[in-house]
Image 1 (cartoon, rainbow, N blue to C red):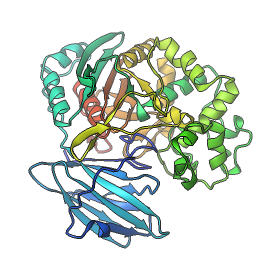
Image 2 (cartoon, rainbow, N blue to C red):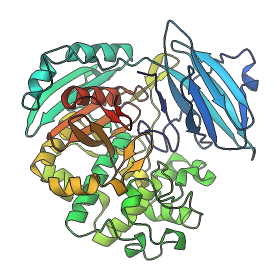
Image 3 (tube, helix red, strand yellow):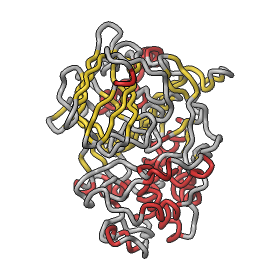
Image 4 (cartoon, rainbow, N blue to C red):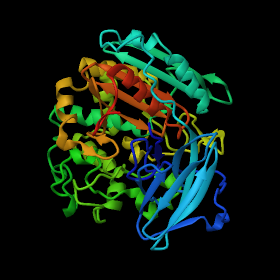
Length: 484
């Protein structure tokens, strides 16, 4: 399979954490012959063409508000990887290998500069197809998971990707059929990483938001087909007529708060004190980024507006609604918002090949898009509640999530706060977060849930393992051209 790139920027793939991902500034080591100050790319547009080792070009959207905007490229220790950027007026070619890092600037025509970092990550260990004893059987998933090399494979991935701690759990209906943990939750205390270890869900938080909105919709509290102005009387004229469900699949065109220069200049304390209403007031008079339904741009701000009118309509806080409609019915005990100013699990990031603690914060006003913490065991309880129909009935869930008109096609097929993936023997719903922190997947027809949690962002390990186990149980992943 071809090498892949996890791009952390707005409008990026599902491996993105959020609008806040990509902060921090590791030391730069330019690979060009030119000095670091001249390592730059001029562009009149924000969309740049990116090519890895001569593969087909893909588009990367420059995000000036991030510092830096990080592009993670799979690199080999044995051979150099060529990275080629092309704009409408310029071109840059770099080579990277091993654990190398490179920073350079994209200079836009309006004078703004976007600092970009290329970070090498180890080559992915691809699905080998030999975990199970034979052809996967929906009647004996447990045997498929335990009969072959899966555990050794997981250990190998943890070591090669420098993951401090990892937890994997697979649930079929009401039974845990595979569970394994590796490493430590805190490198200083050496406390073991277990199924109870809390982890930042990052953008995988959207699974909880999607379930809550589906539960409210099934109860008749919120109509996903109704236009936004049904619940938001002061909706701007440009927003009127946009159905609520578009707020959940990033196709509204509603402007993004973090794209506005003023917000980035606020202190952490000021950002953390923001309310849903303040988010709305900051973006309501701005023009739409695009006409509703004509494009998809990953963001969090529309989720904040959704939370604003949902809490105002119900008279309950977001946390109260989650407890009533999701956490309570699922018997979840350790899932909650992580205080942006310190009350969150320790996490790590790779800095020039070495692990360091990650500087992290997340405003509550955007938390329904990426600010909750959970554990593998709590998500196992969530999977059991899926299968029992305790949060939303299975028929209703499938009727809402798998409707083609509600699925936006990008790098991934994006539905109601969920990424829809199709395999030879069934489709899954779920979401990844933090570029490797968390991945939550559920196959409604098979009643199988897979959760992978780690405490290192940017590794893609949770995303990759979840895909590999999905392929083991459900057959090869399908693309537009067929199975991969």
